[in-house]
Image 1: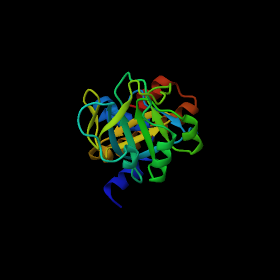
Image 2: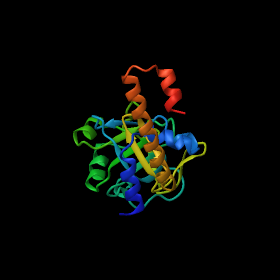
Image 3: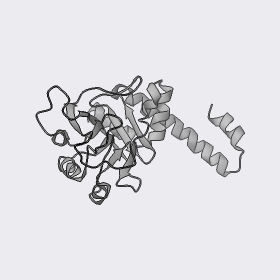
Length: 219
């Protein structure tokens, strides 16, 4: 089993909350939390864990070359695509046909930092899709976007970047990104906190007060 596979197996025991807390302890920017991104499909407590494929979108007719393939065709088995769309644009950049293609290629899901559409189609095919806006965008020539680069580092906010093959984790709490170099440490810290939380929960169920329990167990 590769190191990436081992890391993924370790991370799968924990939620984005757990992983984000560990990344904060490791002083990773913003705890790896991709603020605003939420899972809209398929619901029901779905969690996804996988290496990232990144896509940078730009306004249509922006100068410079574009990828030789449709960006939906860049999805790969066992991966999660992260798409970054310029802020404030009107048009969706992901829909049901694209999810159909991504699912056929074995992708685990798609996270769109921008607008999507066809939410019910994604839900019906049980394909995990997240976005950073709650309102859909129509296909439109007005402020439309096209893919510019595939598998390049993308800045999310400040010092928080998403690199190809970084581990993306998405669940009902939100989305975090974990650099592969930190995964082993993250798993260790998550397990340590999990054990403490189990003891804390047991004490609270036994009727112990919150304040003294927290002081005793969660130093």
